[in-house]
Image (cartoon, rainbow, N blue to C red; front, side, top):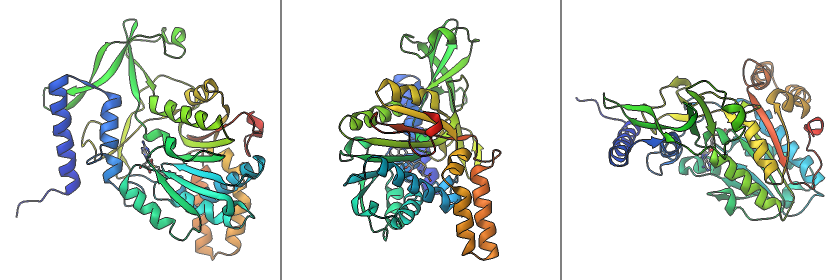
Length: 375
Ligand code: SAH
């Protein structure tokens, strides 16, 4: 019998054909457009058509490694709420909640604290139908009022606490290539062998680029990544903060300051893959530039604290005490698993240092918990 195609490889093929037809018609497309279509196409895009997270998927995230991650972020949210004067109602929003694990763990911790859940309205910003379904299941018995939104802009106004773990790295990047004294858009075209290949588009106006003078000393071929969609998220947070207190915690992998380099990568089944192969079938991601996020926050009239390594964030929020507490009620095997999970979150060779946390708040709030030294 002839081998049958799996539906996901069929969709990927269709997406490839569609992208190639588009390139044949209009010429090379930007890396940003390529990444956007591969990740977000409503039919064949990676997030709308896959269950990417977990051992059986393509990658593992911190909330899937340990329940303590979400629990500690729940405690963070509680302390921030108190610093706002315990407003009611308060929005607890999460951007890109994946399987809903972080929010389920956070709400379990918050249930034990007085007042918060009576006041909280949970708002999940998620575009992927299969992941929305997973979130509905994870939060079925959470006891909170939960609503889903396509974008942060449609979350109701009022005081808000926003959490985003590994959300920004899933937003498309532009790649700009420095060549002969000019910036050029890095694009995707069709190679002689019929596959996709990178190429460089025409020169770009340079006025709006950060640290332009400094970057002009770069060697030919240097790549600078910018992420307009992340700046739009920060601008939307700033818009909310005009009318009500706001605190956001953004956790992701990336670098502290703007640096040059090509960080676009594809991940499939927990391994690196070629970003130009199997569009829509593999995860595309790129480092988060925390320096650029911080500048965007400040330029929009918000306060920004950090970034600090995930290790320091979780230790400051009481990871060790929480681990001790959980181990008191656990058998030896369960306790070993809890310790292994905690270690993976904070180990500098695992997620402890590459992953960083940035806090963004409205101007009326004090530095949030774990960021008092980063003011
Ligand atoms: N925070 C989760 C999942 C990270 S994966 C965790 O830590 O496990 C990225 C998440 O962002 C997924 O839920 C994906 O569907 C969602 N996502 C990606 N692009 C999005 C967009 N433009 N708007 C809303 N959600 C998006």
